[in-house]
Amino acid sequence: MKRLTGRGLTPLDTSFIIHSKEIDIDGGYTIETDMKILATALTDKSCIVERLQLHYFSLQVTEFLEALKSEKCTLKTLHLYENKLTEEHARELANVLRQNTSIETVILNECEIDCAAAKALAVGLEGNETLRTMNLWDNHIQDEGGRALAEALKKENSALQTLNLWGNQIGDEGAKEFADLLRVNHSLRDLIFVYNKIGDDGGDELVDALELNEGIRNLDLFGNPLDQAIITDVYCMINDPSRSYYEGGLNKGEEGVFSENTTSLEAPTIDKSCFPILGGMHAADTESTASPTGVGELSACCWTEAVAS
Image (tube, rainbow, N blue to C red; front, top):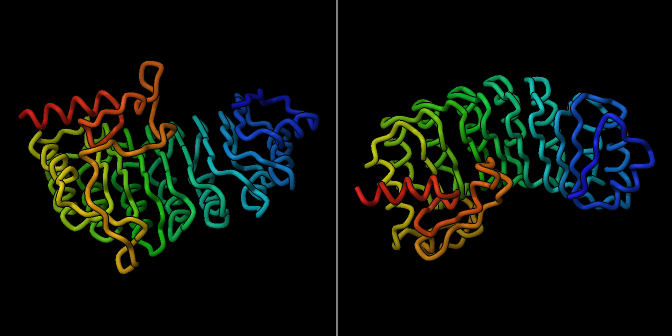
């Protein structure tokens, strides 16, 4: 990945950006000029940028937002790290997601997203046929924001496969909303609830929902105040050899092909960029077939202990 320092981009950087597949721009300040230069590059007919990572930048520059909506946009991954997203910012990003047809992954690590911002962002997920991965780890979504996201993913044609809600203060009420989602949505493959506040009531609802779900391969509840029996139930259900999965089908009523459960034979493939970095490495770097989560040693230990008990 080629890295540039913001607060000082010049038109001479445009060509460099256009001909790079991955760009990381570390700003530190909100500089409108930088965002306009970036917008010019993204809408150039020769642009090949597929991954854009921005640190400490604003989404309030009109030219940049319009560039993301443009048919010329080639981005597949938009990574906004520690960019404070207010409700207004989230609404703008949702509008982008509703119009963009190339972005498959959105990573919003530590963006201070609260309930109101999560509600605004959820609009961009409704019926989105392009977006496959959304990472919202370490924000402040809570139950109310989680409810909005779950409701959005109930809409027809949602193609989202990975939703990472690591560390978002989601409790039993939020878990129940996602349980309702799992009863009707078969596109989700990975649903991450690591380090939330889900208790036994919410955990039981999720277990019950798995009985009706034919998509989930990875439901990670590590770090929640749950009875180990619930974690064991989740592990056993996902790894049940008789469990069938949709391959290609999305939501209820859509045609899809069933396949045999293979989670016990190989760990699921997960985009490592969706997970936080622990001890200098991605949490997904130490995948273990002992864990249906495939998100690292922490979860593997969790599952191992659960099975042993």
